[in-house]
Length: 431
Image (cartoon, rainbow, N blue to C red):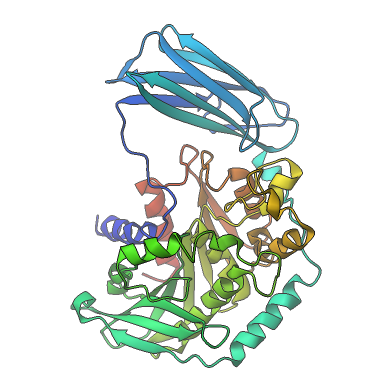
């Protein structure tokens, strides 16, 4: 029970940094969509049948009118129809796919003037999905050069104690660290156990957007140094409204800033900032000198992989539904990863320069460089980080890896999933 309590607290804090979607709330009308395979997984050429049921108060809704669309995820529907479910349930023939990928059935119904929605996504030989993005021949030399330039910069770390956040066992600091060039900073919340001793460290990297951070005090109370960072070079202790204003102005669409220039693309400061955060962590006198892990979800899932690939000091990585994955998939007529910079809504990005730059920042190409154990967690119904893009990453990992699937999940997690990831991390860190 104690282990579960701490695991729940740990990942409650972790998931607070994943901003794109929250776990769905209960609704009066439930649109339940499933497949005729318990594991939602099929072979190429195998027919998929989707089951649909509409419930209210635990009972099937008779004569429910539904509209369904079936097709490869994020692509135009290949089959759509409006039908009435006399008994409140039916089975729909979804067809098959001739290539590995994901076939999605989205169902909507209108009850008492309100629309309700459900979906299921069948995986078609997902283990055979290959990335669309190409690995630049100078990928490793580009990043080695960038890290060498970073290493020349003084750490110039500044720590400000936050007494109101400290506990009997943990000191909490707002930290401010020099990033890859003068004037660029990394901010975060550092939590260090007060008791004398040497401790493992955990870097927590954030989901997309901008927000304040509270720090992972509970994990620090278990004997782990934790650092939760922001990526935008601004303090992480301001009011939420300040970050909201930033996202509506100078940070709006930051994921596409300077996408046509690999040396100026926004995520260069972000990726190097994660390495710099580790520079700071390993410099702490309380660090045990050996055990360093990184974790996060969505954008943070991407950064978990990137950081572990760039920084040999990282021993373990636990990415949850990673973004920034196989982004050019849309240019090959299949789903690409968040932030969907090459989808049909962004034709201005379909240029040689932007496609070339994206390859240096695509998580697939970092996954190919991984050498440390990775605990990977995701679902089939994710509409923010399409599973095709996430499998392109997972299938590119040749290092030791574990995969825990929760097929029904979208861009959210079950408590049981959180517990598994937390226990894996704490086990590796000896806690």
